[in-house]
Image (tube, rainbow, N blue to C red; front, side, top):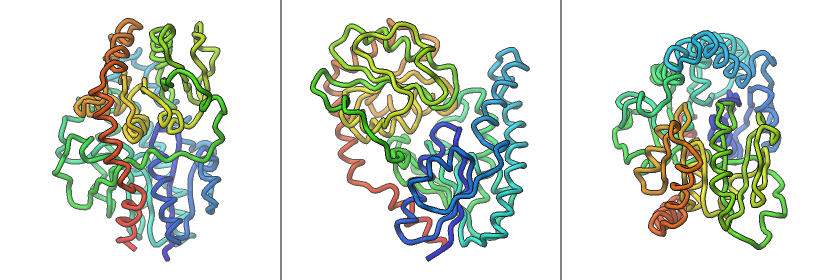
Length: 383
């Protein structure tokens, strides 16, 4: 069995879950894992019962990325295009700082293999490990000659950062894309060393579910905004307004960085949580209303739930376009995300039996797969 160093950071939306899913599968196969991560990772990996080393608090990805975005937006008076290079520069400085602890861990732990996420690629590249290393990309294919232009798939503020990460993907010995190939426009031109492994992002840490989820009543609709700060509370408010008089029960998840006090009036058919298992709600649910985060969309597809998607930024335009191409989602552009527009999309989705049938067909196909096992098998090939 091998010694595996997992370089993990939380705070970049859904970047952590696919990495933890593949790492859990390696642990289950008997490999010895050490997780090097920030404080959020320490909390998420507690259930894995593996050795964890915590980065200095000033290297936490969430505050670093959030600070870079706030400073860039302030410097450019909110110009998303002009803010992108500033975010990229700040995150390069963060990666350079993280590379020191990564290099130290490589020297002291002497791993046979290193695994990281797309947000870790620059730090690990700078650390220059002597062992083989793997990148687990949490979204659709990122790399040379993608099926759609990057500028169509990513928000303008995120584009320079993603272009920088993509330019480094020749360095790892293996790149795993934690998505479904059919979802990714059935793309068949992956470079050597790149592989689709399926939706690893459906992994969630163990949690206790509220009893109200299983109470009899109208079907559940999950409304979810990003776990990373991106000013998308208006999606939630518009969705609640549109769903307030419909025969459904609504569960809104705000994430840890928002509180219910940020909302206006909450309809009687709505419950609000900061964090709850999305998979548990979607398993019981009729529809997802979301910012089009890749992890949320993959969970909905896995459980056969149609979607109404309002892509806000980052990779969300590309995720929404792929879900729409599958015929499992209505997409409402951010600039048109009024309660009326979201309400019309909700009506179409809730009344469209064909959309639900397509979602259920993809769910049946996906549930025959085992993405963590596929990922672990490919990673083991380097040991």
